[in-house]
Length: 105
Image (cartoon, rainbow, N blue to C red):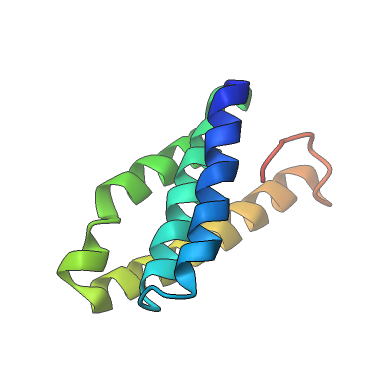
């Protein structure tokens, strides 16, 4: 990720925070997973992390659920958290304590 892309991500976060005070509550999770997608893609590319690459792809393919089916979108968000927990457990098991040198956000 180039410096200008990081700047744009920071600007997006700033605008999102300001906009959320007047926007529907449902926009918050969508804005956060947008940032997660960009950041996961950056880390995936930087560290050849297949898990985070898959997460970024999954977010891109399912973020439209927020407009189409809010219940399915909420289920997707819950499953996303579960995927991260499972991956953390897998990494901890590999390293027998979590210090395997793998870089995740």
